[in-house]
Picture 1 (cartoon, rainbow, N blue to C red):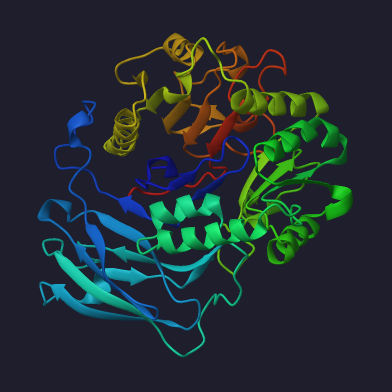
Picture 2 (picture 1 turned 135 degrees about the vertical axis):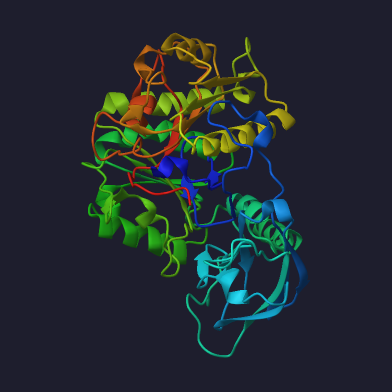
Length: 474
């Protein structure tokens, strides 16, 4: 079973087609197959099982206490949350109680080493009601613990804070960090803005664009537009930053640590032949995002306009400007519509696809999205049905299923053949291997490069994974 089937509700941070972080380390819910799952049906009724819960019961400057609870029908689920911890000191864990008391707490709770998420030092706490290798008939119905900073040196201590809390990251903290104090940080941000007053703009930029020299003038209108919107922006070429991955990271890290207005977003402009990616297990731009601490959590949102030619760059810039700057009067509500797709494998792991997809559907429905097309391979549907849904103009496309290069049939559409005009979707490809952007022919580049600057096709942004790993849902 591939990673396409891991039941992880990852935090996908959308930044309007210009800067992306996909964070699977943060607050997530993991489930096992519902008891009434049948591979023969499309199970609308088995999602949204009762889940474990977590709450803060006490929070001070040096410690925080949490209470996890679990109902019997959620014993196979896991719950992971991010918790803010003090900036310095080793983090000690003290479990106060577990029910039933005969269970070993170490079999039901794990706490990660601290990591830096830009403004915060956090740990990931995972509650496993069913236990790690314990009796499958026993489960923890509740567990109470305290995280406390000791006087001993700790991992990833935070000794320096940026001039103000990032407005973009505040939204992430609110949704992922269990004990985040939004009101306190909002006051700090208001104070920073009021102190600046009408003075000249301070040095730096929240929105940093690093471009291959030949694309400088092509991308400049996007930089100017961001600046005009109130997002202080800076444009730098490789002649200024240096041309190696190490040079670029050093430039970004220096900007993060020394600029009066440090970058929150970094947009790389050019394919990997022009603006290199970092190569570890795979090509990745997270190397440029994780600049504070030794962890992998992003401190900056990094995206890329992967263009080989000035024409491709012009097309991608035109799509973003059309999406943000030029509203469509004939169909003003198209951004709040969606197509949700599932390429069933017709095995006992398909419940993961449906669990994820109906979760998204309900979120969109409660937010007023309409229409929301649901295209499931088992229904059945055809390639023509997929084209028709996309061509009607959708704000979001979400795909669940297996893929490599492109989505498995019947969802293997060619973005160049789509005809939605300027009603371009944000594409979320929640599967393996469709964002291998260091090679040509993969869906990620095909969707954003499709069309021309005057006659667009495809999508305005693409979010996916560039890894291909075999794994079990368990």
